[in-house]
Image (cartoon, rainbow, N blue to C red):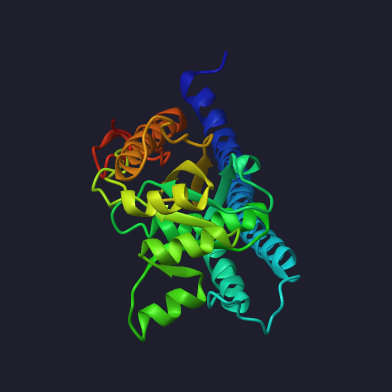
Length: 288
């Protein structure tokens, strides 16, 4: 019968042979786990890179498509002809292409506008938004005809540039002349801090539309300062009061336009950025 000492002597060599095997197995498992983890990380990084690249590519594709659409739409205009109102189609086209790099503008209700006759389009004007120019460009692209805006300065530098973009002097006689010549003209209300409110509307310009016998359309504009989305929504024409004549008629029509534009803004809903900024009362984004 083997003594305890003899059995211990037999076990010690066996433990010595097992230890390297266990160590080798541990090293193999470690290398395998590390390799698997590296593969997972590499695949995850590749997926993220593909997603980011795809997103950037999508934005670039949208911008490129928009530029092609603008260029194709306006190529029929003469490139060397400045019309009697001073509008330069080449400069307008270049400005539209540049604007498309920043904004993705959608226009609704443009089918309500006359195909050939003149009309006055009155829009709301959030402060610093250049709403009349922005709306004139958007509507021009939607209806594929020149659209002018009221409010160019009467000076040599900025006035000359605004004139080439389709600007008219803020004067009833000039606006009435353009409307009688079957031009589409955009007038902005007085700018406001709150983009959800509509400022006072110049009733003398509205009176020009009444005298010219053209329709007056309310239009609402919204834009997102943190994204590319922007929209112009044109409503049904606001009818002048049948029982009024003279200055009282234009005053009442201007008041009706403010109400109609406010209604359009309400129907368009709140501006949303898709970010936590929607929870903050920042420039009335996400707030009413």
